Image (cartoon, rainbow, N blue to C red):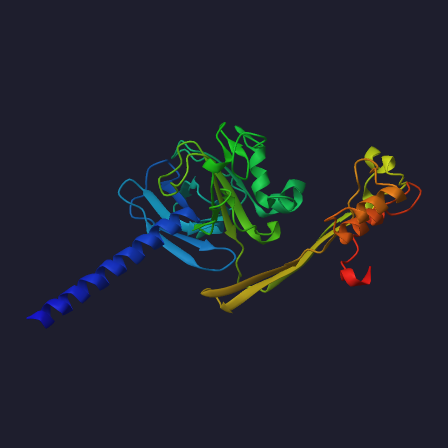
Length: 373
């Protein structure tokens, strides 16, 4: 009897585990995907019930299928973001294909498909269709695509692509509003924001901001949501900052990039002149990297990788000249009880005349054993 109950308990635990995994997959899919809805009509405007609709990803070749209901309406949920070729077919109608239709992150796109009566034309292709507005929800959203994240300068510094949220209405830099990292959304503190990568929590528990920063060239899409977003997100009442990483496709592709900041690109400011310099001191920031992706199993399994290296060389320029003790002052300090000799050596190294090219204080000498003084 006990063994029977033990087996039943084990079975119930396995069922609960499987249901939990399915729920997690469904929730995460809604966070990292988009939806596509629409109606299938004929050329007179009447609905076509039972029409077959297929959405094929233009990059990976993966196909998704749906069937229109009695009202001619179809729906694709949790489609991975990307470009799709959407086709519809029905008895006695020609196949109509809409090419290069964009499914955006965290957005429901609407596409109406009109079928022509089958005759001399067997297939109808439509290209260049304008993206329809999302009329299915009241949330305020902005989606930034790959080209914007590569071209806009604010996406390559600081918080990376998260800076693009400042282009949205109701968003401002945090300033002195309160604790947290990132912009202020709707007048709230930055700590009220929520950051995710591929649907995974990316919040730093210490400063309430993004924990991991993804290079802008490795992000496929970035969406920023505010005001009445779906309960799938939760966590915070501020902005929802969601990123989706690039993936491999059916063709091998890659790129190399370099973001360069150099002292020779900048004018000499007044603080530099106050220190007696006629040219900028060292500032070399080179962020370089590359990426590569492709298929492992065509139309099924893909790989993608991005590698980045960011060496930086900076020389600090003081805001104004520093006053240091005279030779007599050094002698008095060295003879004072409890005065460490290495401190006196540090002060002595800071003696500098504005005509010198580089202040010795910018390169603090290594500490030596006191016995060598």
